[in-house]
Length: 428
Image (cartoon, rainbow, N blue to C red; front, side, top):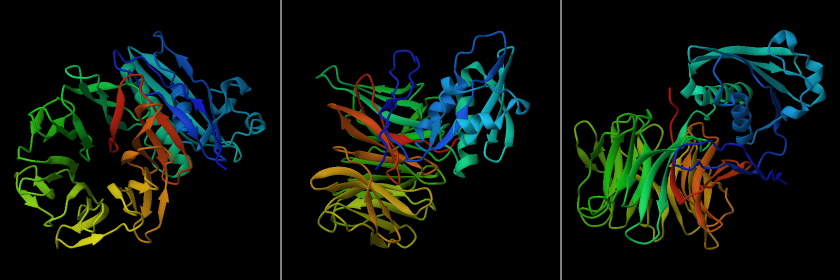
């Protein structure tokens, strides 16, 4: 039986008038790896504005795969390999140890950190990373990613970000919607786009420099593409009827979306360079919610062409359509895992909407969530976790679960309903 942790990670930091998403871990692995992250040494004149080792502890705890040793239980705070006494850490049951030192000079911070194998009694590696005061949190996430990848063999995603929509619906004319951007742990939220009109379906370009979303600011649904660095935005659809569900191709050159300009909803692609619009599906049923396969050769989408919503795949070169899901009477909003082996989708079971995953090859389906009205799944770029929208204590919140359902946590907001998460790609 999975161990319920029921703790709140200390991940709440000031960010102006925008509330952070706080992390509430509700389930972790039965036998997490025990790791000690000691307080880092510091040599500098300026006061540190971020607790780098504390953020690393929180990151690794958030993964559900690690149990950091509490600082109060540590017998020593080594700063170098010569100061590491392996017996002290074996007594605490620690399998790995992270040490570090921070040097500050003229507002520039250099962090040297090392990872040690306690049972093997050896230093695995030592690295150095540097940045400004504003980047201290980024340095912490970088360390978390490095440690996570070294131990698990999977690239860490702590340095990624998440888009989401914050909705304040108190009756017209005070309704408002904010498109928000935050770290993957909910910290440092910032406003991307404020609106008096609904914002839906945010999504990332594969290089993380642009986003696309649906806005109703023109009086009807329209797809916009926006540069994050400059805020420059462009409306790319202006057709009558439905304009929705944008999705960038893996090479970033095309955008798939849904249009109903010719009658019923169909899947189209738009070449962002030439502006060539191509109709992909041709069916009297409703085809919607396209998402690209990792190789860019096909799209998965939702269609009721079989009578009820199910997931289909269309190969772009041939136009051949294949049904992928058969379990249950409702499957929608599918996303393909980064390795191309699994589908993540909204699945209805006993009248309740859950998030489920299906092995594409075998068709085996697993329900991942047990909450109510779960929707909008978005997969982390390393494929380890997915984020989704749900309801908790009467509010719309974000939550996350691992693809094996072993790790679960919530990200409730202190203000407004939160919905429509979109996990960023890696920032290389």
